[in-house]
Amino acid sequence: MPKMKTKSSAKKRFSKTGSGKIKANFAFKRHCLSNKPQKMKRKARGTRILCDADSRIVKKFLPYL
Image (cartoon, rainbow, N blue to C red; front, side, top):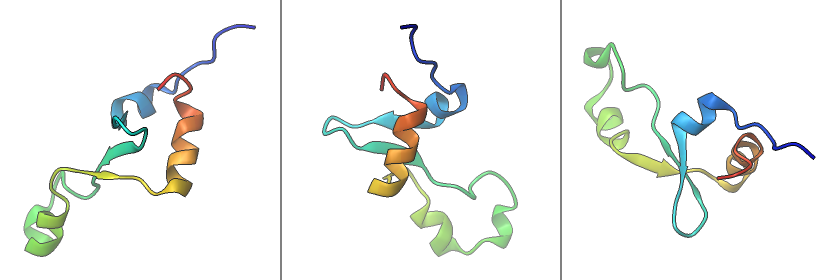
């Protein structure tokens, strides 16, 4: 059986924590930041842990993560 392929876009966007959860960046932080409220930009700082439903989808793209 050949090795499974990893989605290149997913390996750049997601990483795994020590407890096995999937860590991701927030969206809507690249451009037009003057139009977005300060509260939205402040909440989007750093990274977040994906919910179980989303992490199941991402784990299909990253078989060796």
